[in-house]
Amino acid sequence: MAASVTVSEVRLTHDGADPITAASFEVAARELPEPADGEITVGVGYASLDPSQRIRMRSEGAGFVPPAGVVGTVTATRSDRFAVGDTVLAPGAWASTVTVPAADAEPYDVPDGVPLRHAVGLLGLTGLTAYFGVTRVLRPRPGEKVVVTGAFGGVGQAAAQLVAASGAEVLGVVGGPDKVAGLARLGVRAVDHRSPQWQAEVDRWAPDGVHAVFDNVWGEVSARLVERLRPLGRVALCGQMSGIADAVVPPLPLDNWFRLVTRSLTVQGFRAADFAADNAQARKALAEMIAAGTLDQEIQQAPGLAAAGAAFADLLRGRTVGKLVVEVRA
Image (cartoon, rainbow, N blue to C red; front, side, top):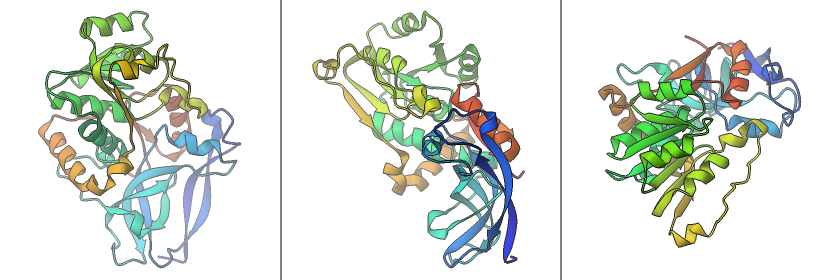
């Protein structure tokens, strides 16, 4: 590789604490130096856009390049771990090319028949989060009634299908009839929390109460579901989409927090990083489900870095459908 290479990257145009809109981002060029000892340079194929990136932006200013999980090809290396041409997963950025410590990257063996974009979806952080949240935290049992909130987002889609695969009955809670229809295409029943009848629909589906909740949203919807938990019910706390646009955690408006005691409820927060030692095993299990046709994901693909900012602004306001990725290089 030459001493440096010109790359494109997406930058914030204002203080990150201000509201995020499509105009909050611009694409700019810069020179990327060659990798130092122990580093690799990766040409990005796909980058993941996730709600959690909003939290990081809040404390940054104009010129900040948001982080992203990426999959791509090694174009230069100063590490024995990777050769030029290797496909890797790495903690990158909204950029066409990134340089990262080789120790932070993982080799990615593209499974047969699985599109590369799934590397930052079902086989990336969103899929791993769903897998560990369902199999290690929530642990649904056959015949149980389990609700997944934010069920048509990147994590929610996978979580709902994983719950169904466990033998439990699953109900998704989403925001909008298009997302109800999207989950139906994946074989999952859902209710629209924007409908005044959504709580009654949950009660008809689970007249004796809910056994467990995989929660991606926090806030009002989550509180109403906690009130419907049966004794010994469980909650896996994964995300806080209800406040993500403003990068704040809203209160959980429970009228009676003591019900956690009187009903012997278990509430556990988690991160995929808690189980990182088992990433390879989890990816293998997820890839087998994809190949078997028992796991799928609807993906909204932003066509290039120039489209990333507008797509991310839509994500924060619930206007995207499915898992959001940026196709940086085909």
